[in-house]
Image (cartoon, rainbow, N blue to C red; front, side, top):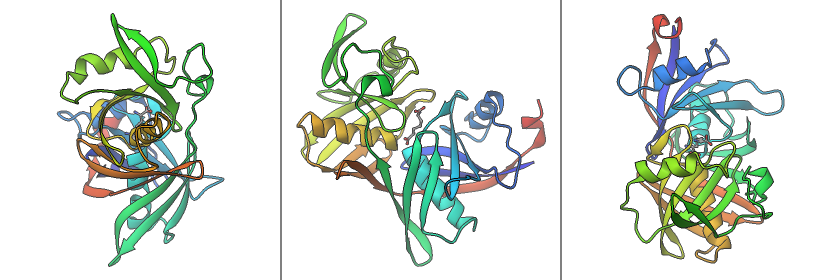
Length: 280
Ligand SMILES: N[C@@H](CCC[C@H](N)C(=O)O)C(=O)O
């Protein structure tokens, strides 16, 4: 049997499992099964807490379809709350190893409770090769790309994982139909997370996201950071914005070449996964 905690960061929900004291079967069958909203616990994916040789902890994250993601912005805030609440550490400043690099995280505690979490998300990467994006220019900033006979202007970057940002007049559109076209687009050999953005003003952006491996989610932390930076370099916003997603608002800023993200982290419930679920 495996203990788990269901947590969410503005509606981006994952199943958190302590992989330090338990053996976690990190295979796609197990991930998709427990993430299923009918046959499992229900989530956008799974996050496993591991020991790290270079940091306080290591975060592994898996999307709904079982694919492994390199970084997760909403996930890392909940990860930090998890290790603090489960007394795996007493520290309120943590360095967390991810496949998308080392992230620095601060827990803001009041009344013995984690009130919100602030993360240094590092430097955004624009180089096409490093995203990776098979575009013939070094960077893809507001470039016209034809998708199914229609032209969209794409700004692509990595926040430790790949993103492409598209500006829209409004966000009332069929994301199921459009999102998948970018996720599977030949320009992105490792697939891509796609953010659709409405600029409300220079300090307030609205977005919807289509995540690779999970489809539409209520929120994406790395996506909100990608949106902030893309909007900043396109001259559409200041260096400190509120980003509104379906599940809530994140505070994102760009200071001295690095992106900062602040937002909530919430525990929903805890439970035990029966052995028959993972012994297949
Ligand atoms: N929801 C996440 C991002 C999760 C990973 C993404 N789908 C990928 O595969 O890159 C976030 O909050 O950043």
